[in-house]
Image (cartoon, rainbow, N blue to C red; front, side):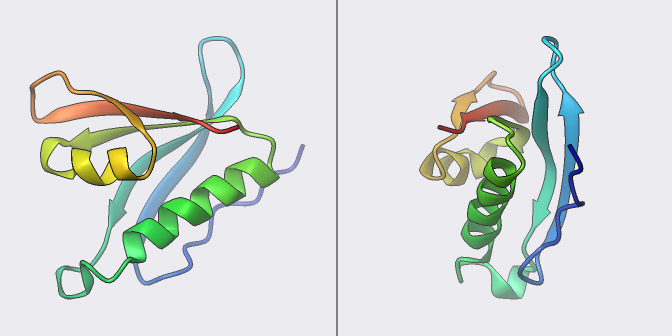
Length: 98
């Protein structure tokens, strides 16, 4: 399987990686999504996440994982991620793609 590198569709900075989980399955790891402050609230983050999900599906990848700052948890939950809020500055999230 050949997987192209993810290409952002907005001016958002996106760091996305393909890794193997403990079972050896390919997963997507979202390391960072940064919308410029002046452009926040315009739906760019949502558009990027929706495009990452589409990209994952097209490459046969069924899981996306991330680490999120606590103040971004509501965004990730709106995007469908199950967040394990550890109560610290950073929490983890998983989205199983159907």
